[in-house]
Amino acid sequence: MTLAPPLQSNTLAHPDRAFHDWYRFVLSFPPHLVRAYLEKMGAHANAVILDPFCGTGTTLVEAKKLGMSSIGIEANPVAHFASRVKVDWSVVPEALWETALKTANSALLEFQSEGLNDDFLFNSDQAAAFAATHDLKTLSDDEQMLVLHHSISPLPLHKVLTLRDHIVRTGDARFSAHLLLALATMTIKSASNLHFGPEVGVKGSKADVSVISAWLALVRAMVDDLVEYQSGASISSTVHHTDARMINSALTDTSVDVVFTSPPYPNEKDYTRTTRLEMVLLGFIHDRASLQAIKKGLLRSNTRGVYKEDRDDLLTVTYPRIQALVDAIEQRRLDLGKTSGFERLYGRVTKLYFGGMVRHLTSLKTGLRPGAKLGYVVGDQASYFRVLIPTGELLAEIADSLGYRVTNIDLFRTRFSTATGEHLKEEVVLLEWKGGS
Image 1 (tube, rainbow, N blue to C red):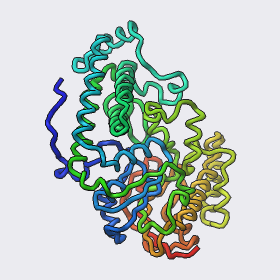
Image 2: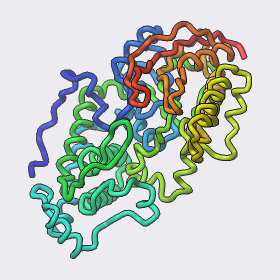
Image 3: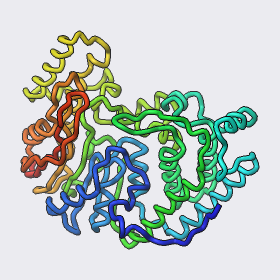
Image 4: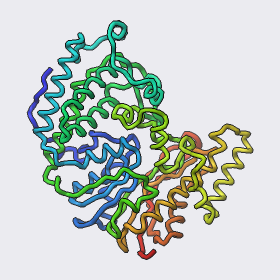
């Protein structure tokens, strides 16, 4: 295996690729949309950009590339970790690469001592025979309960855990976060059996995979990006791990000039399932209690994240359109004779979602400069018995009631709904903060 190709940069030819191969959600919005709306909202070099649902950091990265300071808020620990790493450009690229090569070599030596070759892979019978005669590294019983069954086959998991151990052993905090993020990305892209469509699922079975070369390729993508953009390392970009519904504690009073973000949509997607394997591998969750603690810090958008003590739904009582929508969902449930626990929660989670957005927009006020511009990318939904949820219109109504000025609702794109056979709108709700209490 050749481990040391020369350093070079290739980001100028593919500006939208830069930083996004490090790690990204399947449903991330495109970088060009961020750039277009930062320009449209009048963002300038001295502006502070906020993304309160920052996911894996697309807005933060684009702001930093444009020379603008940014603040991110994210409650999912894997997405927060990815965002934090993606805006840390202070790492010396050459040193990162040298550390990666040393780590790769030490992991390869351990593989060789076990009789594994990361270039010449076992077939399924050989992998099964190897697993039967060797004590492979694996997840704990509690951790296995958290991930989708057969998310990753035994031998690839053993290799991933071995490489993870060697990264941790480097003990160098300057590089470990970047190397671990590359490990998480490699695991999902190359080593796991996961596939991503409308939902995350398991497809096929990879008996053996080349872990080291795939991981090094991702580290090289990081190195190339850092070489290209290292001049922007001093531009401030801070990512807070907190609940976007209680955002004021993370913001300095009247510091934010522009908000651009895409909150979750009200639907039946459990967003923690998308990152469950990475959460376990990186040590963010170990059992159901630690997973539940994370879910309780998220905006309620699906019935798998609803808890008895939730009260955000009470904040929607002054919004007749939301109540009428909930009544329509409940009536459709009764008409269809649907009685499962999840189906009974469809109306309540809709109220919890919009009530959570009331909390978010209320707590955001103290951090905004008078005249601050805001853009929210949201999509209409028909997940609950095919009752249309006009997310953008309702969010605009909430914002208007809280003292924001609705300047426009732009159509971003449409997407085909398999549930209704119709095209649903994705929109950018544009707001301006007038100032005041």
